Length: 454
Image 1 (cartoon, one colour):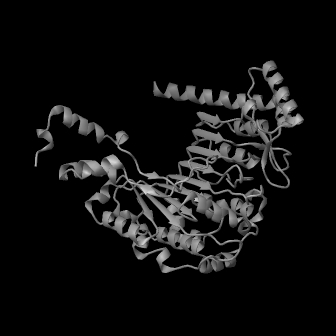
Image 2 (image 1 turned 60 degrees about the vertical axis):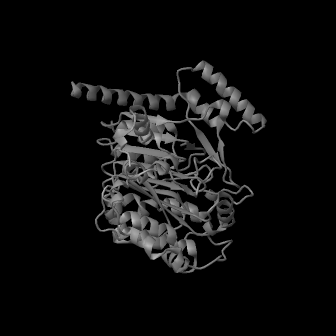
């Protein structure tokens, strides 16, 4: 067989170019992973990198050359075929190439409180258990993602999950959790999956991402092994699964969902003692009200990213308390609640952050709505008048920045713009003054950093 080096220079360069990581098609989840929170596109079926697979079949040389890219991201499903396949990789020399392991567990939820099916050993084969509990056998593993879905296609997954809407109506105590894990396939799968993950005694990966988290407790989260795993991480990402019942009622009207969000510190946050990068995302139909981030959590935090969260005084205090370490903050679709009740204005939020003069803060990105994009399909006179008022105020105060104020519909839980409140706050100018204080503080910090680098 001809050597790679015996080929023409043009062909050799072409092959090497194709082997560059950015040119080889990466693994895709074509039906299960929601591309973004406002998209109807999910993905569930794993597609192998086509170009890399084709090249690897040419000869042994090409197989060796493509291996670092082909095995960089691998997917583990909760079935025997996938478990055996990944076990083969784990026991081979190719295990050293694995950087990210994506675990996807698929089982239906109960339908309106009636179990569709009970747990089965086939739901979580020994081969899958062995891989999840032996991750140290991937010597260069850097990241693990965990994702649970109800079905293998978007339509079936969405339909099953929607039919399970009222399962989130009541908060669960631990007895209810254990009963559900004994009786329901998905809850049992969650328990067994996290329990396997918790049995890793030598944990080398530093990044854990929990995707599409169903708002149900898992008893395995109380295991010492799982909490030790959380304590060893440097990066933690968690995205909640929202939902609605098909008739307009949002999941944030259900006490079970709200209780789950309020307990996230017990499940995860207070155990993240070495975290440097933290990312949390809720959804538009389940925005996080009162996210339990407390001043004692994550003492080494360097980067904070939040999406679909209502700001609170506790959140401002959390940011201020990490002034020695927190460098970057990103808010996407984060709002001030109106009427405020236990929430605060953007101005008070910024003043609370700036008052402690955080020394490390260098970047604070906030995505805000544009008046032309605020629910343009809603045809009401007050909406129209509110938008016109905001436009006039923007022309009058062109140097000011406007921030989002929202309210939740009392019946359905939908998020609506509080245009009059936003206009009042914009005209008063206190939100902008608070933001200006934060910006001036960041500029001072940046200047100090530049002087140190000279």
